[in-house]
Length: 272
Ligand SMILES: Cc1cc2nc3c(=O)[nH]c(=O)nc-3n(C[C@H](O)[C@H](O)[C@H](O)COP(=O)(O)OP(=O)(O)OC[C@H]3O[C@@H](n4cnc5c(N)ncnc54)[C@H](O)[C@@H]3O)c2cc1C
Image (cartoon, helix red, strand yellow):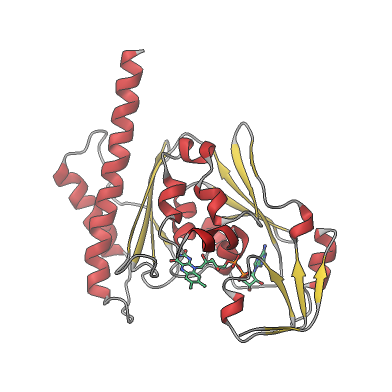
């Protein structure tokens, strides 16, 4: 169990950043991860007065405040419509509804857990993290950066017209995932992310891109190429070999989902 010796409900990000520079300080998101540790926290920094629990939709992005709960993202109609249900799919396996009502996206992305569903999914999109001191950093770079004492303020997800899909596998419902996969297709091409390897999610750019209307065999080949490029390890949940096989299947399913979305768009376009 953790211990909190001091508590600051800050009135500005500047105040939060200053307070967080002490090694004994800790930003408190939902506190769901912190509460399981044994940290001795000199000053618990509470961001709840800063209005960072909102999702804003602009013409070209969704901007998610760091204190937004996983549940609010899961249920966000605009984001789910735009990304074809991906928000619901990435969140639904994380523990339970009450848990997701409390855990925040700031705590989830800042921590860059290897098993993270949202990290894998947002990495497949065009996502940028807004850090208080570090400014705007593409998630593709942030994922491999070291921890510092900065504050993750918001997450910006570009509305660039890409199609996206998310897949994960758990041994039992509500457990940590054994493999997580995000796939997207934009004008720039296909982007695949694989997490819970069990290391942090990584981005894989396919060497052989798919044709416009790929047959099953081509998708299978594509998925195999990704799973062979990824490095998997073993832990109490699964062996590396098993993860590789699972990843191949999940990448294939996500690609099929996107191909279906593209087909539906074409059919809707023709019927208009
Ligand atoms: C039992 C259990 C099962 C879980 N299962 C899954 C799962 O299956 N899939 C999954 O993806 N995740 C899972 N998680 C992780 C969970 O979804 C959250 O990611 C985690 O609880 C952190 O979110 P939080 O808001 O609770 O953060 P906190 O516990 O409050 O904080 C976590 C860390 O992030 C720091 N922090 C918080 N907010 C910020 C910020 N804005 N800027 C900088 N630093 C910040 C804190 O100082 C702390 O070091 C699980 C967690 C638990 C406890």
